[in-house]
Length: 274
Image (cartoon, rainbow, N blue to C red; front, side, top):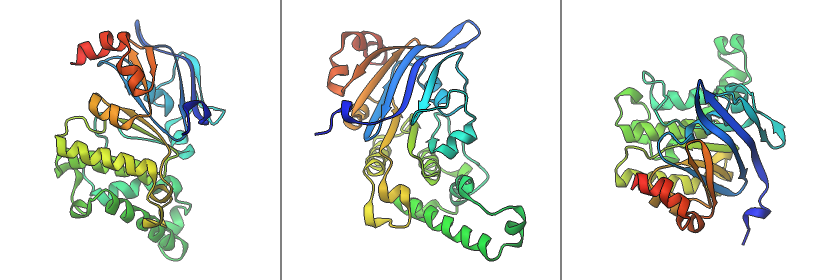
């Protein structure tokens, strides 16, 4: 069995601090995000979980500390550059093009991989046409994988909340990430919807092999997933390792069993969240 010590570090966060005026969102947080694991970040509302993700993919710039992605310093990287490196995420508050269809939202995520320029795209023949066909095949595979066929042509703004969350997950997958950052992907869902998303996360992590041979992200899987989630049952079932934040500080880290029995966690998190 592979231990966490043997797993290669994908993202290294060292003494990260982030403040907004006099409010400290993060205070000297250090975390190693490793390959071949699902890392859960938990903590009460306002603990700094989303702020940590925002620093990783460039939405926030920390006042101090460092973030390394495969030994490259990405502390002050732009979000578009982070996406090109393979860092994709979903958001706590759904961020989709609400006037476009589910299919078009997924196609929009493929733009970072499109090589044709404005002129060849305007003429739309030859290389530009072939490139769009290639990207559309990947998007159609993701639609099939996430069981979104009935909503593929429907306007996203008119979809139920659970389906919009699924479209957002699909858009992150369409970017073919090396690291997938999931910010409360099951928030506001009923039990059946949560079970579906949990199943998708496991299948994304493990990969689907020859089922989707032309879609690398589905074929090979994403072996580095960071999950923010309040449902402790989901966290305990999915996570290989858990980091606990409280008031912007890391108070615990370990396996689900270690975190579950940690007195600090019970006091700071479980006691507040129930």
